[in-house]
Structure formats: C-alpha cells, structure tokens
Length: 508
Image (cartoon, rainbow, N blue to C red; front, top):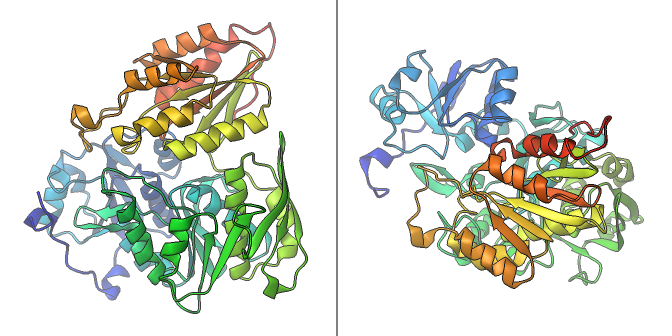
C-alpha cells in the first residue's frame, strides 16, 4: 500500500468545539507506553476510557487495570467498538486493514492520533517542554520534571516510561509547564511524520542523533532532516538545549530561530558550551560533578551528586538542567533535586538479588544504548563479572543493519546470552534483513566473549543459573518489554544456590 491508498487517507480535522464535546474515548494500541499514559490522563480528566491491544502484558496491563480501564485483546473484532465511543485514538502500531480500524471508518467515528489528541486536550493550556533525541529521552524528561517539581513549579508531564519519583508515566500538575518525551517515530497510518511535530515546543532539547528506527528511516540523514524540521518549530522566544559533542544535533538545531544553550562534559567539546559538567567523578554510588551554568545567569557552579551511574546520565542531567533553567527554576534547588532523583523503571532497575547476584533490568535495545548501559553497570558494580542477557525485540533490535554494532557493544560484557528474536506480525522481516543471532554469537566469541543462544526463555534462565557465580556475577537483562518474565525465573533459580535464609532484596 501507498499513502495514496484510500485506507490511509487522513480523517477529517476535528473542530475545536467538537474536542470539548467528547466523553467516551477508545484507544487502539492502548498498551503502548505513550498510549497507556494518555489513557490514564484521560481517565483522570473524567473521560470514560476503554481500549484494545494485540497482546496486553505487564506492566502496562496492570497499570491500566489499577485505574479501572478495560482492555480488549486483539484488533480483529469490530464489536469492541459497540460500547459507543465518540472518539477513537489510533496508535501508530495500528494498520488500516485491521477489522477494528475498518469498522471505525465505516461507522464514521471521529478519530485522531495520539499526538493530535494530546495537543488538543492538554497542550493548549500549558507551555510545552519537548525532550528529543535518539537516546535518553525518558530519563531526561523525568529528570526535567523532577527539577521543576523541586523548584516549586508544579509541572505536568507525559513520558514514555514510568518516572521513578512519581511511579507514573504521566502527571497533571498545577503549574504552567508540561514536559513531554518527544518521539521521532511516525504518528499514525495516515500520518507518517514524527510525533513530535504535533507537540508545539516552546522549550526543547536535542540530546543526540544517530541511526535508529531502520523500519521507517532509510538512513541517518533522513533522521537528521526530521530533527531539523522539529528545530524550526521552536519559536524565537523559546529555548533549544543541545549536546555540544553531537555534531548532527548541533547542525539540526541551527534551523531554529530560538536561542540555544550547548551542554558538555569538561574536555568533550566543552569550549564555548553554556552548561558544563566539570571534574566528573564516576563512583559506585553515582556520579559527582560541578555544574557550570550559563554566564548570563550570574550563578556560581552547583555541586551535583547524581545517584545514577554512567557518562550518558551526566549528559542527560546537563540537558535537564538547561531546560529547567529555561523554565524559570532556581538553580539553588538543583543539588537536592538531583540527589533525590529516582531513575525511570527499566533504566538500570534493580529487580532483586539472590545468591549475592543482582539482577538488573534495562530498556537498552540499540548498540549505543547497550554500550552505555554496560559501562554504567560496571561503574555501579566494579570488579564483578558482567553477564548480559539480550532480547532482540524492538523493530530496531531485530534488524541486521545493527549486526556489527551489537557485536561491538555487547563485547563490553564478560558473558552474553540470547533468546530467539521476537517475531512481529506488525513488522515482518525477510530473512536477509533480520539480525543473525548465531552470527552475533560467533562475532562475540571471536572477540573473546563467550556467547550462547538459547531460544526458549525457560531453558535460557536454567542455563544462566547453572553458569552463575554466586557473589561474583551481576546479571544485566536488556529488552524493550518483559523478556517473558526471565527476571523472576532467574531470581527463583539463583535462590537455590544461596545459603539458607533471606537472600533476595525487594524489587525497586
């Protein structure tokens, strides 16, 4: 199909007055991280909300159930619309050929994308702060919101992950600002433009920019063009915060009429940067640095203790500080805010510990993110044998375009395990386009790292436990979803290796 197909034709625009008349809203693809957040926000606003999803699974299915939002499984039964919604929000995983999508259009139900709905119902009354970039959006957006909260600015936020300080992926505060995780992925089956084009940015960031989403972008130049267009949306009375060491991000930012602040770690393109992390110290309990603020603010450097490991989190903190300053936060509140920041779920999250072996969960699914995550775990657990488990689950991770990149990133671990790649009906791949896990194992072995493919998760967990070294290993599990519950399987198996008595720490 092409964009000229009638099935992909954009729906009629919804008038502003019509938006205010909706009461019953159905979300297709409701268990996506952003869609789930929107569903909860709509419910909190008093809308009657229901939804459907191909495969509801925790934590989002539990998150929605706790808020009393019904979820129907599958898109092949048009009867899920019989409850009479007056608006349908269509997630970008939805295809126009799904029975539910066909019925939606045949019945003439008003429908819109997630970004359109967010903009129409929530952004008009707030100042949007849009966090963008290939990596680090969830952590940076969470950190920005927390800096604003501790500064007394009572922000709202809409984030594609669960912010640790709120234990939620959304929040409606009383303040003027709304922090949004700006996604460059496409919007809906009738709108192949990036979601963040709809978010009306007034303050914004471009954290970094590299090849990703090979299912929709032909190359990194296409991604740069998308970010360049985004930069043009930030107005002259706004502010754009950009990482100084990211050449493509800086180039894209030049298209904006907004003034820019550059962020840097001392010695890494820090000459001329506006926010600089000086003298960073990477320690087992996090990272310490002196935060130099833009000269025009007339404020002395701020001593920061960030309770997160990894150089990448220092870059995230710099961008968050810049956005918070642009929104009017007092930098005197930063030390306490950074020190009390809790990472989003699935970002170096300690699930539990048994037999003296921590089990860490992380969202990493791109070579650069995997490399940064492994380095961060080594900082937190120096001297340990780092055992990595990786599930090729996302549309990025399942593609052969990153074959070499995954080998280089995973070679930072001491031992690597794989389960079979996820098959996705929504993203079918010919064999020659798929990540070759057997070849990846061979590449790692050639680099001196033992690597094993065990297709099924139960057998994988058993093999990892049999190979475990109590008190010496740290297990890092990387996947964009729940990895079929492997974390609990590992902890249960490791518990049998431990001495009698309590051996497991509570999950975060």
